[in-house]
Length: 210
Image (tube, rainbow, N blue to C red):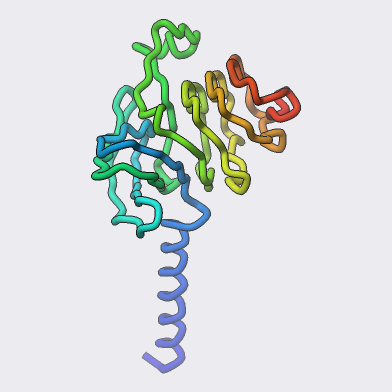
């Protein structure tokens, strides 16, 4: 193999490595911030084939882990001490973030709240740090009952190009105070109770649902 061919292959290898690294970290990932008062098993309500890692603020991220979580299941993450943690999820394979679910899909579709229950650690969720490149297909009940939720000013906007359902996405997020009017929601068809019991979210601050 000639010298120039070796150089070309070396450059291609480097580019592939950089591309892979970029797609496993950086702006592409979905990042949420949680505050726990003591060591605990945090219930992280994401669904799909997940590639995730976490860190205590001020420390480095741990190694990437992989698992598959189906509807009705929840990922438990063992945290060894009190503190503020970031949880980072690769966009590929992440299907949904759903804090509240129902005994069956009918209860979820009809928003029968008496038949719904919280599966995630809603009391500990503090912030969406970054939306990343996740292509969301449903946001129904995504952050419902997360009273202390905030969205970072530089979190970006979620990709809702294939999302038709944002019903109760921020239901009872009583501390939420963010300007979300730039969200692109032209394909969203359902937004019932999206901002119910969100006193700080005036109509001007909400997405422009059609």
